[in-house]
Length: 248
Image (tube, rainbow, N blue to C red; front, side, top):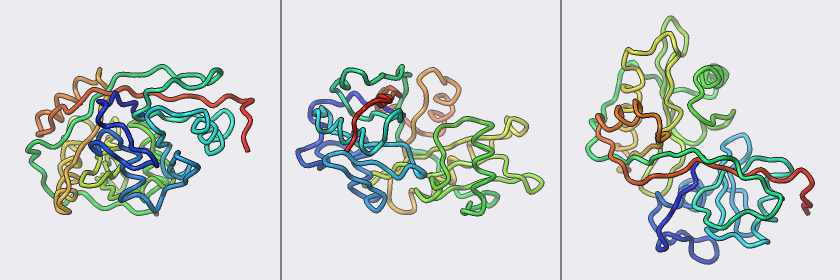
């Protein structure tokens, strides 16, 4: 979950349009662009379906009406990721402690298709959810696979590593859910999958990017060695809708 600290020029324009760089307004850029068919809207607030992705798109400085729309879409007690929001939530909304993160973008990645990387399908989702549950790479839900291409590597028929595409703003695609089962780490499987997913993104004429926790120095070092460069620092944060919030 990412809370951006955008420059003033990157604030959304009135009416929900994207006015700055698409990587500074990620969910809104995606949900008003290539992922518009997923968008659920109430007023100026957009979100993905609950079984696809947890991400919401709020104006940079939400009004009381915007927060009311968030509550109506999310429901009492829900956790709502914040992205590009500079305004404080209303009284009674719990701010989940932010975790520092980084955004990295393709700057000469040696993208390459991998013959051992198989395209995963909805039939593979139970195994994907189990792998995510063991490795904790970040949110992956029953329909997240619909966001883009997911590739996996199997050993003895079992899915042991995967990576895929998540947020898709115009001209860019995020690489996400990069994970390897504990018993198969140290074999370069994550590297191969990141490069293979990047190759598919490049084939469409788009630019790969990804996120990592700021304290995950090993991952940042790996991505840097593959040709990703630091674009900006971010925070991963969210708010919790009050249990007693009134929705209509």
